[in-house]
Image (spheres, rainbow over the protein chains, first blue to last red):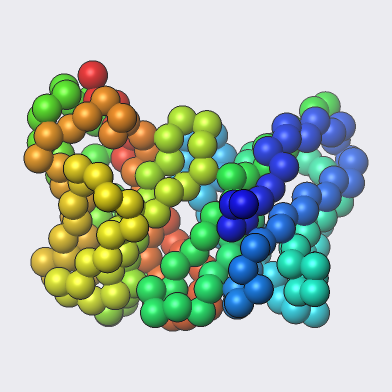
Amino acid sequence: RKEVEQDPGPFNVPEGATVAFNCTYSNSASQSFFWYRQDCRKEPKLLMSVYSSGNEDGRFTAQLNRASQYISLLIRDSKLSDSATYLCVVILNNAGNMLTFGGGTRLMVKP
Amino acid sequence: SQTIHQWPATLVQPVGSPLSLECTVEGTSNPNLYWYRQAAGRGLQLLFYSVGIGQISSEVPQNLSASRPQDRQFILSSKKLLLSDSGFYLCAWTKSRGMGYTFGSGTRLTVV
């Protein structure tokens, strides 16, 4: 079983739609959680951290469910510019502070 | 502010040739540094990480090596490239536990 699993998609949605991605992680000792966005042939960029109480940043909402070991990302009112691959990332509380990446979920927003 | 520089942006190298990719971080001290590789259409694979000068941990045994000769410099090397070394190489840094990474802009390596 992979440490961090995501549905690779692609998710094809029309502009203005609401779309949600889930991500599951296998290690219950995981301490920190993030969503990254990666555009085609570019480096990943931090989209948002995921806090236990859930957090929102504009059209983006992230939630964490420790009991079920998954995190989610909700995008409301999708824009064409939201088209990208969204990477789920977790950190074990280890000395190297290493991030473990999911394989990513590809989102394509269409006019 | 902190910045991370990675070069070159693209590289085409013949099989069996050496490799040296460099990454530097500015505006911080004693960062944790990482090298990742992303094969075409695949996820990110951690290759090496370093928590200090001269301290290198390898995650995947292969014909690549890494060095950290200075606090904010991280180098990825190979003596002889293989076709399977082709990919998108990303350097990243972080300062504190629990913090996300900042990635460099990456080097797209094609071994021919």
